[in-house]
Length: 209
Image (tube, rainbow, N blue to C red; front, side, top):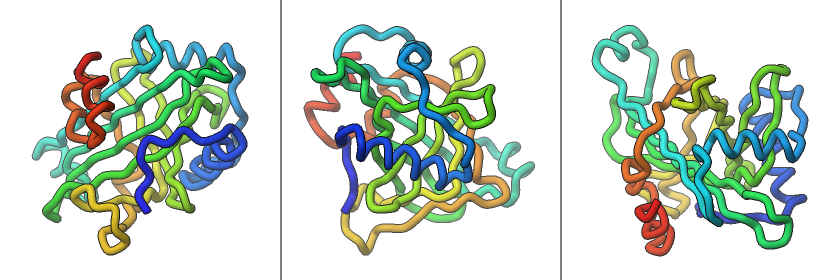
């Protein structure tokens, strides 16, 4: 079953976070302090106020880039990171929605899952969100460039669906290869990620931002 924007309880979220980190090949991790998490959220959402916040990142690879990376399977990618304030713990809980097109395959592919509010340090210098797909669906790590204008997406394997179909027949995985393990996406207006949202209320909130 496909996972939408679900905000799990903390123990489940932490397990998902750890599983996502291991899915992308990261073992040396720790949960960030609240101050570190707050700083990261402020960077991610550019200081957006309120109970909900969004950040959209997009990359469409041109012919020159693809020629220099002949083994890259992905032709374009969109990432929407969303946050909602939890009324109980008073912290932002994050989730992700990922959409992309293959280079040599037709159709739209997508994935989604929970990041909660956990961030981690992989090597002592970079803080990332650890985002996972339910039921051992792998996950992604999301960091920010130093100027906060780009997201750096890392993955080993993440479960995907074609054309937004939740059925098992459409379920596949994007597996990192020689040129598909790290993606640098540029921050852009949230309207660019509207196609990733299917819930009407969520879409209205996104467009309002």
